[in-house]
Length: 305
Ligand SMILES: Nc1ncnc2c1ncn2[C@@H]1O[C@H](COP(=O)(O)OP(=O)(O)O)[C@@H](O)[C@H]1O
Ligand SMILES: [Mg+2]
Image 1 (cartoon, rainbow, N blue to C red):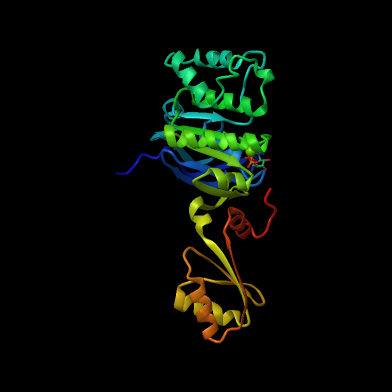
Image 2 (image 1 turned 90 degrees about the vertical axis):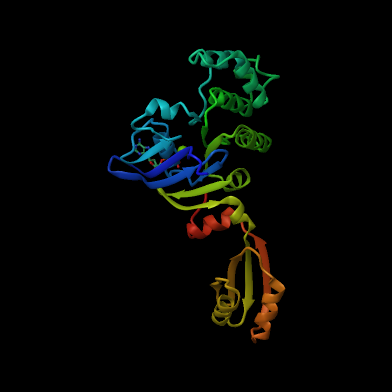
């Protein structure tokens, strides 16, 4: 059965003052997916998010949320979204609970019980009656998430949510996001300029650079590929042999070094074969791929952060 997409971006573009900032982004997300929007500062992440939630109008293209067009059915589309762009708005002199009650007063469907459940979900039950100005950054962020999910959105959008969190805070945040996605079925859209974070938290990632998505991939698939490097005397011959006999696409990295990304590899057999074919193999290494490798490859060694 075909699932309804929670979020669909179709050729989304934005030009501001003659400068094209977002250059045709396409994306489809389904329930329970944790999506990472990864790119350096200034890549166009926040601009894309502002278009998704209808804060600015796309120059071209469309945003559809749970089947509703943001341009034509704004209220229905946005009723499925909870979001935090930049830092969450909170009254610092009120308690966490008072903030949530204030927010819930705008929506008659939100019960007391729901507020209590959400507070527990984000793990704020012991501090919810303290004033927000006594909260750590991580606690404020959890309160922000509680507010964003209180109306049971299908899509939660968080723009650079771990900025300023310490490592313990980041781990906590990651666990919370997983719980929301896998236990509550929420689709989570997280933007970040930090590779490792996206790698550890997300199922799917799009890498955006200068307004263009240069790659969308399943994070597990990237990680489960191994990167093999061989040092040998005749790279051209080795590349041909690997391609013809093992269906392995290798590329030449340096004068005597080639490399390939492979999922399953009987490396002992491959190396035995290369040696039998007369190649002098001086070194072979294997390491798990990371998003960083991919990011560096795709951006040709540009600075990441
Ligand atoms: N309102 C605006 N006017 C002019 N330039 C803008 C405006 N909003 C964003 N930009 C520019 O668009 C680019 C992308 O910005 P942004 O979407 O905030 O990137 P990111 O969130 O990935 O860091 C930046 O170069 C930024 O300066
Ligand atoms: Mg931004």
